[in-house]
Amino acid sequence: MSITIRKASLTDLNGLSHLFDGYRVFYGKASDLLLGKAFLKERIENSESEIFASFDAEGTMTGFIQLYPIFSSTRLKRFWLLNDLFVHPAYRGQGISKALLYKVQEFSQETGSCGLMLETAKTNKIGNSLYPAVGFVLDEEHNYYTWDAK
Image 1 (cartoon, one colour):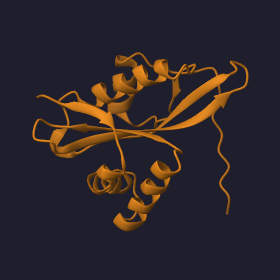
Image 2: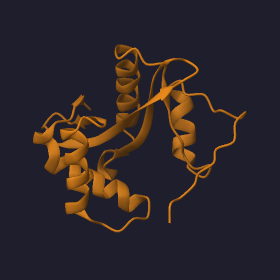
Image 3: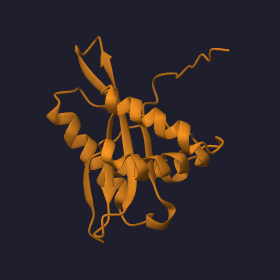
């Protein structure tokens, strides 16, 4: 399968918002296409994230990956948080996730960052085999904590 990956723009918002809605539903959130579209529009307009989208030979958007900038004080550089990765179910198993991951690794190097970080559930069997296959290393030395505002 021939795929193209490029940075998403506002002209991609309709297709991107449908994939984003599928991503959110996959993670147990209620479908809300309009709110998701507004969220993505704001991220793009304010340059608050970097979104790359994959397209098949006919130009159909097949998946996306979204990065948020953070910084490493100890490394004195930008660090990219890989927050979202989703491939439409009809296109899975065709190497699109790997291609998207390779694209953001290239982007990370081009931007002079110190790397990429991500989290995934221990039960995510696909992700836990995918990420090491493209060079990510599991950090078993640190605890990961969250705090949720009420």
